[in-house]
Image (cartoon, rainbow, N blue to C red):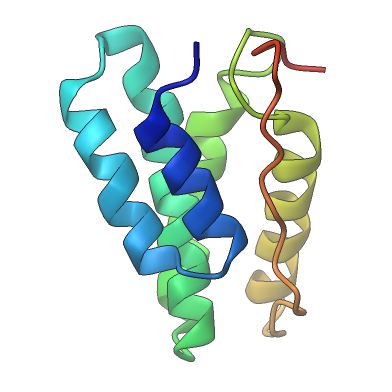
Length: 120
């Protein structure tokens, strides 16, 4: 079962409310068992990266994208409540753009909840 707070975090992320997403997921992160903390942290850092990108802070976006990507890659092939493959690909592309001095194109990626909590 996917926690309601996680679904709310996904909703906020997908509506472009990245700071609020960070706040919603941080509450879960603080209470999460050790094996789930990095997933939440990766999503939080990704949300913060897009918040930085919106505010014209490419260095903040770069740092958070890199950190978030590192956390999320550890969950490839594991059962998680979102489809990680397209998210990881989008983060890698965004990171390449920012590192090359370019802006991340809008719209930013969206999170896809998986009903079965299985990663594809």
